[in-house]
Every structure is written in structure tokens, then in C-alpha cells.
Amino acid sequence: MLRPPETFTTARLTARPPAASDAPAVFAAYANDPVVTRYLSWRFYETVPPLGEFLATRAETWRTGDGQFGWLLHRRETGELAGSIGVTLQAHDALFGYVLGQKFWRQGLMAEALRHVVDWSLSQPEIYRAWAFCDAENPASARVMEKAGMQREGVLRRWHICSNLGPEPRDCIVCAKVK
Ligand SMILES: CC(C)(COP(=O)(O)OP(=O)(O)OC[C@H]1O[C@@H](n2cnc3c(N)ncnc32)[C@H](O)[C@@H]1OP(=O)(O)O)[C@@H](O)C(=O)NCCC(=O)NCCS
Image (cartoon, rainbow, N blue to C red; front, side, top):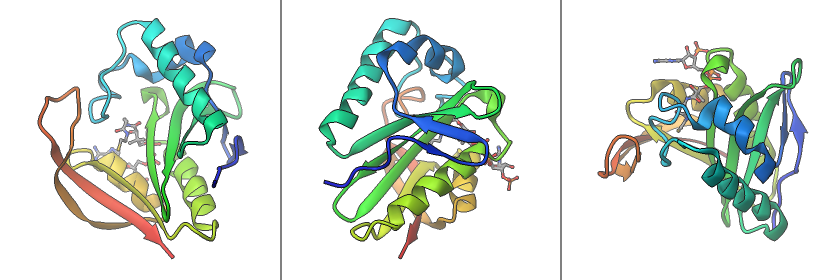
């Protein structure tokens, strides 16, 4: 079964698997922020313990290798927790998702992280498509995908529920890099 590297570094970031003990730092960095989580599938966390449970399941994934892998991203210079990025590996494609604390927005950091994992995925013989989608009203995320080398393919109508915005599936922009 295909497994990504557990750690990686880019020019300004280091990445490593999460642990339940990261919950207070993740809570403070981005998971408690309704602005950050506005277009994500999960509701922002109001307390730390359920986040710890979630991070424990994410940590377990690295042991079971069930196809979904997440990393926490830290600034190399300061060691601060900046955000996270994850990939779902399927037979021939890699689907990415990502989030960054507001303090770290607009510095090109997520494009840097995404480009790294996209290029890793497409260097695997069995992966032909690296892709991601974002809410149609989240242009910063669409731009990150383009900056990471993906091309905009179109709009998936009524594709994804943003729990913070209501129960109905919303239109999404889909981007991909293929080989
Ligand atoms: C989306 C997100 C990851 C972007 O991370 P980032 O590190 O700030 O992104 P970058 O700095 O690499 O690039 C952002 C690009 O979007 C552009 N941008 C930012 N806000 C924008 C807006 N409101 N409208 C249009 N473009 C915007 C920036 O100008 C930049 O493009 P440029 O370099 O060509 O100027 C970050 O804003 C975030 O975590 N948002 C909340 C979580 C989220 O929505 N995740 C994605 C779910 S699909």
C-alpha cells in the first residue's frame, strides 16, 4: 500500500504526523477560529477534548495506512504551529485538503506545502491525478491550487457541505495536476 513520507520539509515549513497531545496547540492555531473553518467540512471546535480525539484518529491512520494521511505544518524559523495539510490516496489519484491559521495567511506558505505534496504524489508510478476542491466562494484556496501547479477544471455543482454555512451541499471549484 502506498504511504507518503511521515515528515517533510520545504523552504519555510516542516511537516509531521499529528498526535492527540497537539490538541491545545491546534485549537489555538486554527481549529477554534470560525473565520478559518468557514469553508471547511468540519465545524470549528469549541473545546479541546474532542479535537484531541480527532487528532488521535488521524495519528492512528499513519499506523493503519488506510489511505488518509495528515501532517501538521510548523514554521521552520520559529517552530510555531501554522496549519495542516492532508492527502487521501486512492487507486490512481491523490486528493488534498489544507488549513492555515490566520496569522500565516498571504505569505505563500500553503502553496509551498501543497506544491511539495502534489509533486511527491505524482512522482509515484500509480498516481496520475493530484487534485483538490474548494468552495466556489473561497478564491484564496482556488489560487493556492493554481500556485501549486494545478489547473482549474471547472465547478462541481452542489458537491460539498460546509458545516459552518448550513446543511446544503455547495458549489465547488475543482483543480488538478495530472501526468
Ligand atoms: C486558503 C488558505 C490555505 C490559503 O493559504 P495561504 O498560505 O494564505 O495562501 P498563499 O499565500 O499561498 O496564496 C493565496 C493566494 O490567494 C490570494 N488571495 C487571498 N485572499 C484572496 C481573496 N479573498 N480573493 C482572491 N484571492 C485571494 C492571494 O493573493 C494569493 O495569491 P497571489 O500569491 O497570486 O497573490 C488559507 O487562507 C486558509 O487556511 N483558509 C482557511 C481554510 C481553507 O479555506 N482551506 C481550504 C479549504 S479547500
